Length: 401
Image 1: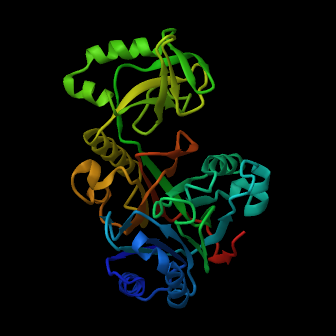
Image 2: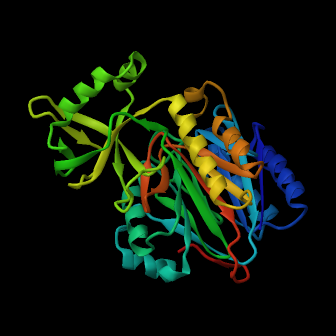
Image 3: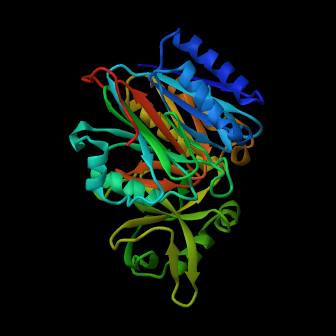
């Protein structure tokens, strides 16, 4: 397995593609890639058909997938403004790749439909790269249906961010360019994908039990109204955390009931979307279950950096060697706007895991697993890291389903 990633800031898409493609050829030493990922800034949106055509001619063996994005990541650098095109390529011996097209009007939650459409049994252990348009795709239904069909299988990706209204985004798959729905790649065979979802938060207060709730309304924590608990928590914090509570307070929900202690990333972070001062209840951006462990969390740049550093360190200790290649799906709310300088997450990745080809884009929502269940996130950086898994078959390609 070999990966390569390149980036061009040329203003014309054809010139940008040529520059990045030459860099890929150099890194791969002439080997023909099986997979090509392209992420283009809005400056190149009107030229996406040209990019697809150039990819088909230059890398005829490769399955192309990608989208337009408000910021692109390539060659381990983050470009958040101006014209940019990121190309990431992979030579994947023993890996089967299937192109996936998701139409906006599909019923997505039917697990049996997905198994029939994908054509693989769950024990084939497929992995899913998913890209979608935020205006027309039911991403919640998509990940729920795929989780039902293939529980525990890694699903990762993000929502295109190159447009601000329906039909403005572009999604690439194979030789086609779409303006709605979703696209993806199904991996099987000699590939393993490790995921990290860094939600950028740190806990405050103590873990509590959801003792009463209805749908997404949190009525009691440890038998008490949550607004009462928040008032007491506010009084116990320093000035900086009190300020953060005004704009950066969230609720973390446990996703692994078999664990007593929780590591970073094992609490699903969700928004507080409303409050009832009369009853003390809170409305949460997620369905709630009684007896779930919950904890309030704060998000800021320092917390985001410390959480990602901790998760990368833990991954490094648990695995042998650096990944062959990696993809990063980072929220448009992170990057230089949060950390004050570019290349924050990509630099931290390289610091902890060593140099590795790293591409991706800034998303309008990030797809990744927490506690074994796949979710659509916000304000996160979701990494997918690729390595060989022995026992694969020779590369074969399937058409979009």
